[in-house]
Image 1 (cartoon, one colour):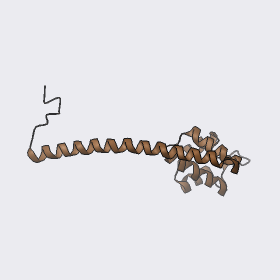
Image 2 (tube, one colour):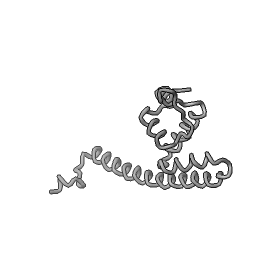
Image 3 (cartoon, rainbow, N blue to C red):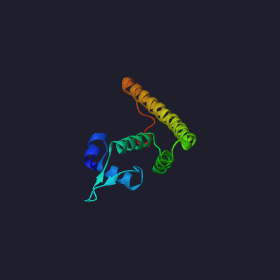
Length: 131
């Protein structure tokens, strides 16, 4: 069994976040000892990894909780879990498109400034200069 602090070190997650996730019901089997200290089993570490992975994808806490609840119900929920993962992938792809647009804008700005520096030009896009 592992304490919150041991899990935090082992899984690279803050103790505060672990406690918060546990309070949200994301780790369904975490037990407590006689001093009411959380104790994580090896199986609980698997749940921590699942939660971390889903949160890394941008999945909301509510969706992660839904996924965990479905896992607890067993194999009859495989299709629904698959749908959740597919929806999250689609959301990530939409975010990637937005990020690519941001990167394109920044690249254009970089090119603009590189040309200004090379030509020792005047920044005509700067409102301060143009007023």
